[in-house]
Image (tube, rainbow, N blue to C red):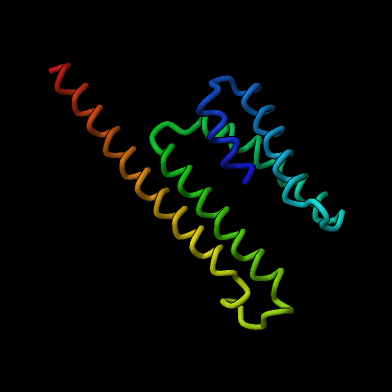
Length: 140
């Protein structure tokens, strides 16, 4: 989660230090909200992942030149998959079959998120290639 937050914040704020700080604060707020009433060990583990993810996300955004869309899609997909795994493992005792441990609302939400992510990525990629084509034609 914090890696994709770092990437997105760095896109909006073009300063590495400032975007890293804001990504860490934003990730911290989400970690506190998501781990509320969970054991302290989970919160501490999440804090470690938060700091590394937010810093790495900001740096990835600044270092990525040609694959920004791929980076966003990849890390968002990893986040969605890890959330599904966490939900399934969390409910493992109540539902021995992994598929039944994931609520149908989560499946619908994830499906919509993946669809929106795919469509927006394709639209962005096509828009970027059209702009590059126009720029190249203008220079000739």
